[in-house]
Length: 66
Picture 1 (cartoon, rainbow, N blue to C red):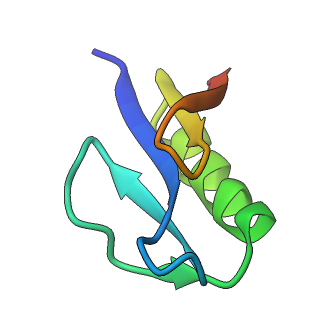
Picture 2: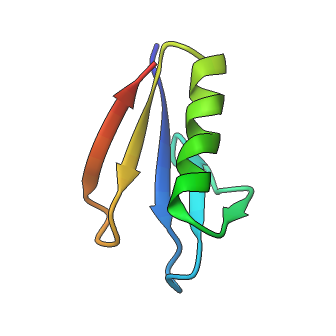
């Protein structure tokens, strides 16, 4: 089964979360790139998996598979 990780901007717009299959995020990142990097690191360890990078409206901007 493929695990899904999401990179999402927080509601205040001042940070980014990595969410694991819609579970509450545990850490906030200052910028999008840091959050994407962490999500990819986790996804690679838990292959098969995918990382969904969402825009401010929560639309999928990019999908990466591992």
